[in-house]
Length: 547
Image (cartoon, rainbow, N blue to C red; front, side, top):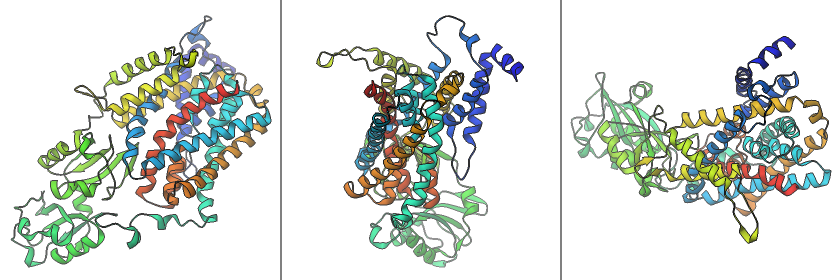
């Protein structure tokens, strides 16, 4: 083992790549839907390797470390947090309950911060362990990253984060599984459109089904004369005739044996079946649909409108397959409101899709066309903002690198355009930069902390573990009470926003196992935007207030 460690230390850059590779792999492992994620996995890999003697001393020499690879990773990660939150940070307010979701996402982090401060005062826990405990109880890599830049003991911070991370992860998942039962909350009955009184006219869950044309009354007559949409409410989107695909328009005539794909509410599709013929398996038509295109919502007149209000299917004879928002997919129900920077995945004739783009915004840039200047220029702007010296009330205040990068990312992520240039970056590119940043940062930080692992474990581990359990439990309970009693949110929306405020994908996965509903993703995405920003700031505030 000593020989292997010595070999790695002679090639420290290769050692860092090894740590990140192992950590990323560990982070992807799942148990009952739970995983550590890139941050948790890398820290769990780096700490023991650092304890065994792996280090990066040869990478920097004996001089002062003005800039490190870990710092570069930190810069990429914090800027990415702001950039991804930017589009939702402001536009979620336009949604019906958007301000409630944002309030709840903020409340989750404020409550956790207050509980953490109180526990630290009660137990005399040091600032580094307290910050790590907060990050772990929230399972928040941004909190950990921001706290690490505040000049505190990196070993105690890393160890506290590592030992409390599983508590925060498992705790919130268990509460999602148990609390609704204890409180007698039937989350599946909260899905919009499940009962007639909850389903508004012209909205609710839509479906796509296929029919074989058999009724003679609908054959040989142009669709504009049949007026099927008016008579049933459903829309024909595709026709398969003798192996050839046809995107229907007003002049299209149906023939016996045609197979037609239609979209609408269940009752509308039943009515269409009576007009056309028997329902058949839709799989063949779905597989043979026209190529999909991705439309970026960038037109102000589309913001805040529902799919039913925009009436895209009937006007443009295309299919909206799903909507992407905040790295999550939303089913295209008629009552979903479009927000700035939503991405619609659509299928239809090229001419119709082009008309749809003119209505909504722009085609999303190809994943192969990433504007690197949006990251490098934005990071430059963030570093400048972070270095400014402000003098409010006669005080000398500097925002700091984390706050500057976060603000720069928020502004550019929200802006959408700078002149004729779009600031949009495709999801795969954003995910790569974000994950690479946190892997490099925690990989180096964890290795350095591992060298003093036993010392870090000796500092009040039971106070830290107990505090994390209390913070995680009471944060969820108090947030749920606030959502139900003060914000008057439905239980399903409440849980979705709490998961978003925690920025916990594991919690979202556990909630999805209980119920399949758009409300989860919509409330999660809105709260996630404010939650990721608040969690980053909390990592700095906890240290400032304990000094």
